[in-house]
Image (tube, rainbow, N blue to C red; front, top):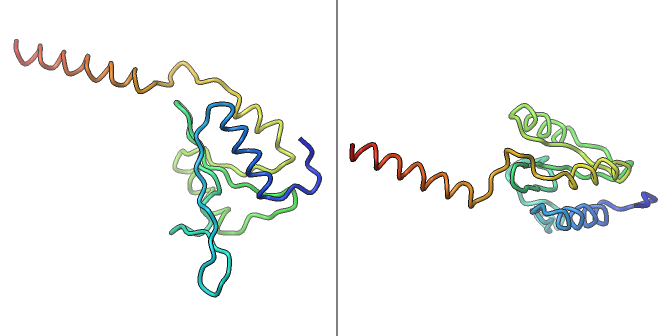
Amino acid sequence: MTTAAVTETVFQAQVVELARITGWRTMHVRRSIGKGRRWTTATSVIGWPDLTIWKPGYFMLIELKTDTGKLSPEQTDVLTSLQAAGIDARCWRPTDWDEIQATLSRRNDATARTRSDIATEALRDAKAAKETADG
């Protein structure tokens, strides 16, 4: 990917497309025109990351910036507090493309469970509980 003057909007579209291709689900809060006819992002937390991405076994919150873009103090604070809570929260820039590709291309690890696995375990546990109750 070329990083020459990539806007944040274009960069986000590239990250979302790579995520989709590699099996991640994504969500981003869209910008809208708010009070005073100024662009705003409608969240209750100032500095909330641009993207939420997940797939079985992984959950990440990503702030996207251009190569010259600066994190606001609020964005830095939110990323730090999310990391302290054990969430994989990070800032990506176009120059991080190799890391982004490696991160989004990784396979599910052996501990990742599918909905089918969870349902099977729940049925097994319910059956075992019934057998215990029945004596």
